[in-house]
Amino acid sequence: MRRRLLLLPLFVACGGPDQTTLVDELRILAMIPDSPEVEPGQSVHVTPIIVDPQGEGVESVSWLCTIAGPPGTPCGELMGPDPRASLTTFEGSEPFSLVVDHRLSAALPEPESFLDIELRTLTCSPGVCPILADVVGSGPLGEPVVQALSDPFTLLQELPIEGVSYARRPLRVSRRPAELRLLAPLVEASFSPVEPGLDAEVEVEIRVDHPREDELTAFGFATAGGFGPATVEVVEGEAKLTWFAPEEPTEARLWVIVSSEAGEEGVWSAEVGVR
Image 1: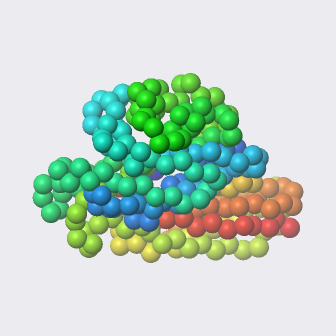
Image 2: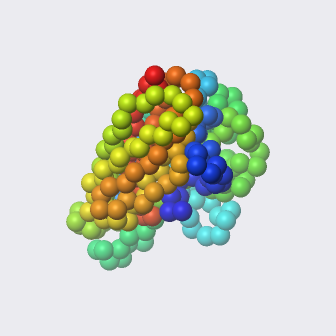
């Protein structure tokens, strides 16, 4: 599986939806930067796609991490003179901005050099994650907080499973010319009207505009029913996913997320009325 944002187990029912595509609990589906390739010192604007089916509200922190050593090594940004520039807290799915560390220029000796860092996000139901209180404010980040943000194992081992979602995705840093940079795919999709029923299979036809369209994978998610299979390869700018509608009338939201191994990512979403 190419997608690196979420690591999902695969449980596929024969002839039916993959249960991992049903979003029935708090989950980060994607973190979409305005550009998947940015320069040192540049602000990157991110649109999070966070699903909160219970409607409890969410609290989140997102940060940038240059991996400078083995697991447990502090993120380079968190050891710098202004670590708070590399992280932010937010609520819901509101867009936010982070500043790429200008010191990464030293790691780009040639005009076509690039390196990949990580954009990481922790989202929690209100009051579930004490670390969120620790990162709010203007004081220095304590060593336990830096360790937790740098090492996913340390971060997650103290948190409950329910009411918590954690994601990380690559972000490329370079000073390359525009024609060489990564580019977010543009995604459109369409489907026929939906009627409920045990055998209500809806073909979602996907169209993708991207220079390297055959290097992309499409992923389906839904708040009701589910997709089967969960992923398909994009071929010549097109792909099809099958959504299995629920048996009873309802309102559902569908997402199709198209991504590349390098971190190029685009999203289509729609509300669906099952009548």
